[in-house]
Length: 231
Figure 1 (tube, rainbow, N blue to C red):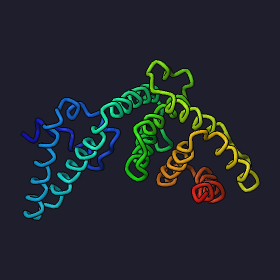
Figure 2 (figure 1 turned 135 degrees about the vertical axis):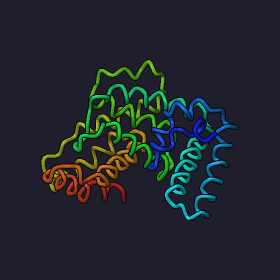
Figure 3 (figure 1 turned 120 degrees about the horizontal axis):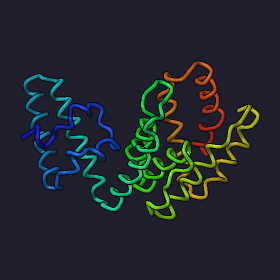
Figure 4 (figure 1 turned 90 degrees about the vertical axis):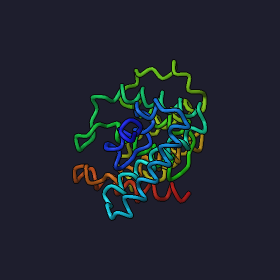
């Protein structure tokens, strides 16, 4: 039973919402099946903990978490489909693109989406915009218009793309002007929040970057993003 309903678990010990949303096993399940799987995972976790099998308990905990996250998004079926569509576009556009550590670049928008959704509580439109921004930032020819994501999503993507073109040569001297530019490009205030979420993910992944890049990112964060966040 567990294998048929939860075969995805082994790959999600650090469950990620974006990956969960795309999982073919979960997508083939009905809502009652997912709810039942949540309960079963909870029972399995409790039994494993009682048996002092903490590795198994952690595994079932992550299974339960992943399914619960999916159910939270499932409350808005249109939002769920919006995220799926945006993720698909980004996964295709970025399939050969890698980060500084050699990992697939899609890991970056996945992590930003997780911050935006779990830690900030932003909407499906914002999550979709994260993926579309990264796809079009590197590959402007990527078709996102035919996806009919809606005006709000396109406004957010446009703001994020404009911000990504700014490259201050001296953060100390240009931080205030750069901050003003970010705000001016953020016709929708969610743009600024997403940019801060993006920078938070970069700082959490700082070890993957070369030394010079790390130092520049730290300086930018101290001089620009922390004051912007407080503002």
